[in-house]
Length: 307
Image (cartoon, rainbow, N blue to C red; front, side, top):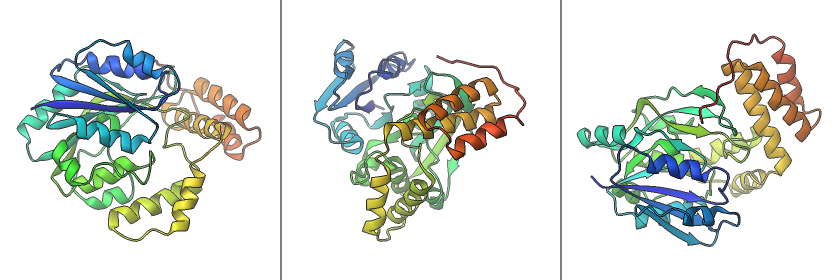
């Protein structure tokens, strides 16, 4: 079985070396690595050109968006299987070996993902996912995305039969829509193994306001069920997606502080993120609620860094 790894990157200089190195250091070595540079204006291209591994193929074009770039990489791929990795995540060394071994004895599976260590922007451990192993009902996609994009390997032909990534909804929930379509092509499975480090950053698409979250669910469910989408809903969603830098920082730091308080029980790092949230926007009600809640939390976890 031939494997192609596809990554699309836009201005990823901060983390991309970690992501690339994690792929090149896989115990499974028989793959090509296609990297789409989506019009980066930072030092990304220079970092890409510093690698001289024959498995790497870099394609640079003007900025067209994440979905279109991924489709370019998939169409260029020679492999029967496509492995995904985002430029701010890391694959653990045995990822490809375990997933390709599984696929070799389960030809009915068209997509396999895994669990992940969730880390913050600095690489500090937050928690470990516990994802559903077998996705046996398409309705699950109407509620949430049961796969982490950087953990999946899928059959190229199944992806292309579904039309690839949806290019209308750019970098918001294009993964979930593709997985929902691929559900009808064969089995979708998550391995119990932890095979990636998934990084939450201020620019993560999953950082969202409550209103944007509600609109995302309405729009994604319309795509999945084949219903018509109200233009006003789509316009409002895209408008709400254009958050200011301060708003992105506020949502991110509140989210990370909440995880440290509710799941990780690390008050020290929770306070550090709450301080940054207050700096981004003083007197935010959600930040104040988290700060008050912190006095009822008992510290049970030490700071960990898994870099």
